[in-house]
Image (cartoon, rainbow, N blue to C red; front, side, top):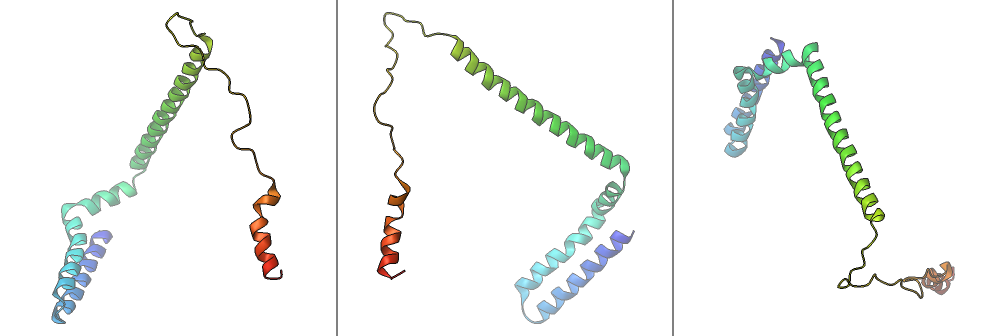
Length: 139
């Protein structure tokens, strides 16, 4: 009952503000304010406010939300475990099965020897530009 009264008061105040805006010849903002002001009244008239109020203060409804959350967590965790098992099983099968050498199959790739792709540069080279700028300014 209190929620319906508050929503009605908010709608009445909003319609009053819309009337003032229309009186000042600001019709577009007045129409927008009136539209927003009618939303709480419409929610009261449809029964949505009563449903929300009865759900918010009902322990049975909160227990139902808790069960829905538990079901959601269980579903997500089982999917995660299933994906992890599928990823591990596929890798184990690939490692366990040796390559079959068939006459028409290409040879296994050779190991690449030589220098690593990107050798790490010494830390002194990274700051050479900065040092030059600092020396130029006498720092």
